[in-house]
Amino acid sequence: MIHPINQFFQRLSPTVQGYLLVLFTMCVWGSFSLLSRVTVQWQVAIWDVMAMRFGFAALILLPLLWRKKDWRFLFSLRIILLAMVGGVGYSCLVYTGFALAPVVHGAVFLNGMIPVATALLIWLFFGSRPDADTKISLWIIILTVLMMTGMILMGAYTFNLGDVIFLACAFCWSGFGILIKHWQLTPWQTLCGTVMWSAMIYLPIYTQFIGFSSPNASLVHLMIQGLFHGVLVMIVATITYAMAVVRLGAFMAGGLSSLAPFIAAIIAVPLLGETLNAVMALGLIGMGLGTVQPWRWLRKNRH
Image 1 (cartoon, one colour):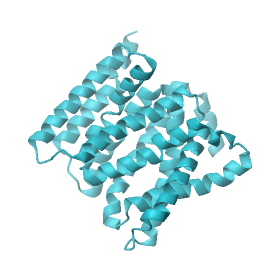
Image 2 (cartoon, rainbow, N blue to C red):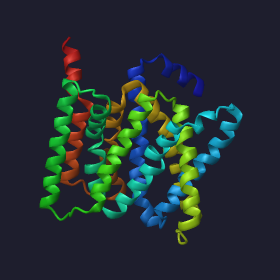
Image 3 (cartoon, rainbow, N blue to C red):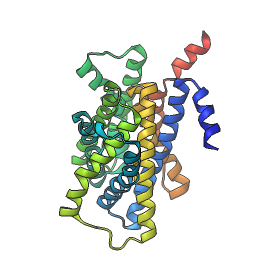
Image 4 (cartoon, rainbow, N blue to C red):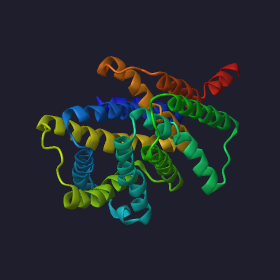
């Protein structure tokens, strides 16, 4: 079953492959938002989720590393930096942000700012200015974020340290994608480096200073969270995102992937009984226009 699917995938153009990989990554990240909300109901602490996330993934990859005999790249300073930025660093920041600020703030200041942060970092470090289409996208996203911010200010929400942390998360994740592309790291190197070094950095700290924090959670709920975050999010989604960056570039892959929380918000309406407020609806429309860039498709069709 897997072999025919792989043959079909390989026959597609790199661009189409990239879009399919981003679509899958979006589904996983969207599910991440939904399951993260369920952790409160299941009484699973986020620090335990992080421990299972890194621990499960490391246990799965260890025998694969041993079998492949391809592990020397792990001792590269680039790999360690990659794990600090996109692995344990990003995870600690994003979980802390969600502990301090509402989810809608994360959608605005984290996911909404990823394309902007990516373009800014590429310009600052590589001097590469965005093309005309990208500039249009950036202006749409910036205006959308400003309008969403204004709507939040007029509502019942308040700004706090969590919003600043979300902004740091956006730059952290953007830097992760840019480093993958710039250093030309393979998906295997990206995956193993991020997982193994995140586990080696976080798990000793968790064991020594935090410890198990979910005494009231059931074993079933812990296993569901551990397998989802450790296998699907940490391993599968990491490698599909890395493959998408190689095919589409950091801006397009990061921008499209940032739509996942908005799609998850729509799914949460019938699934969790939540309401789709005006801020989220505006974000979905604005971010969608800015990242998908429909005018490019219209221009191609005309020619």
